[in-house]
Each structure stands twice: as structure tokens, then as C-alpha cells.
Length: 109
Image 1: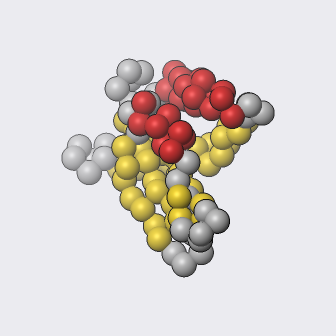
Image 2: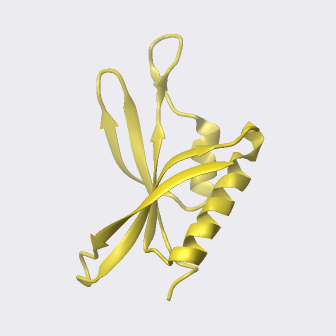
């Protein structure tokens, strides 16, 4: 299992307080069936050790054989099961990605 992530300091628009957001840039595992377990372990580690406000992950789409963008529906389902919400989508000629975010509701200071 490999997880590449980094923290970003953000300002809460409602309270004005400084908060930390973690961005997961890369997740990989040798067995595709382990993606859900791997993501759960990564989230738990980040929540328990950082108490950050939110975690973001970008889900990249890919072109199918017909040249139409598709998303990995299984991975999208895994994100939804872990309460990730769609925040933004970027469409370019050669790529598309969506930004998903989940708020910390379990591990707060």
C-alpha cells in the first residue's frame, strides 16, 4: 500500500479559524480488490494522527476506446461509501478530473 498526501492550511469561511486540510495525491495497492480497505486505513490514520478538518482526493477520468471520458465507477462508489462529496470538476480537451472531499466528523480535538 502506498499513500502520498500533504497538508494545507485553510481558513474556515464561517468561523474564520485556521484549519488543516489533507490532500491525498496518490493511492496504490497491488490488488485492486483492496482499494476500499486501503482507503479506509489511510483515512483512519490521517484522522487519528492529524485531526484535520477535511480530506480531499482527486478522481481522474480516462478515455475509453471510443474516446469518451469515463470514471472508475467502483472507485467512485468506494469514495461515496466513505462520505466523500463531489466539490469541483475540471474539463479540458485531453483530461477530466473531479475533486471530492470528506469532512472530519469522528476525530476532532
